[in-house]
Image (cartoon, rainbow, N blue to C red; front, side, top):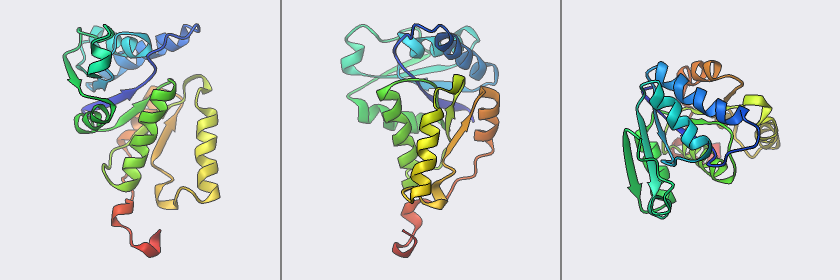
Length: 193
């Protein structure tokens, strides 16, 4: 993996562990020679991931919608900063720029990005690993819900391994590096569905 799209919050939680985690993730990727593609903001966890990666000598490519770039939240310290028309183009650019997706704590926008990466993998728009860093147990309930969807039959057996989750960055990167793509829906017949 040469570059990962990193999905995370633009908020700064009161608990300082989250900002420290974001900086550590950015630095950890950079020290492994993995570039970062991210939302292009300078605030919250987004800004901390970028700062951590840049401080460790890593590549950081920001992709930010025009509306956010013009509201003075764009991070002009990035190696490259791409301004796009909107969120759909932003997520497409993440997919084009990255060899996989890494989600750390965040809110609604982060969930939108994570679920779209999983959905696109399931369909066959990409065959890249989708990683979830469950630091501090932040995603325990989401992981349980994903299992519940599978147990109920809403996630096909062929697609139950799309989400790769781990509690530490090292474990997660190892699991993502060994990810074996599944059979996408686009290659299935109606009887398989």
